[in-house]
Image (cartoon, rainbow, N blue to C red; front, side, top):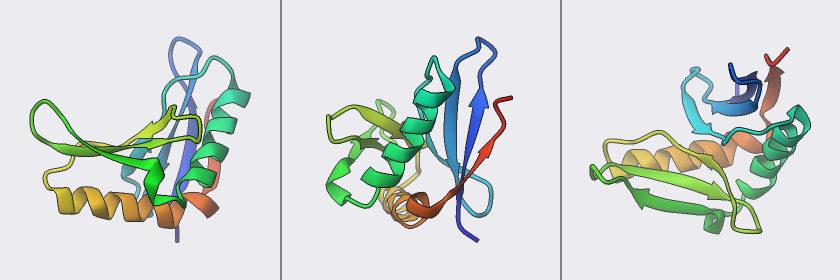
Length: 111
């Protein structure tokens, strides 16, 4: 089984999505969008951009923990990972996104 996207509605009425691993852990989270269609476009952008390694920016939080962001062609961040304990775990997370995102199903829980 591969990962899946979950599209959700926030309490404020905006939309966001997560990419979950096959074990159900969140590996990538989006920003919030005002419209469902915009969030769906964000999912498509993750699918397209996740196959290109240079779209992943490796970062370190102020507390020293590694994480990554995925950027679209226009440089906008379309998803951010969780915080990891090690750089190796972060790289494994990037590998999972590259592997799972292009063909991940979408579970629309936003209704």
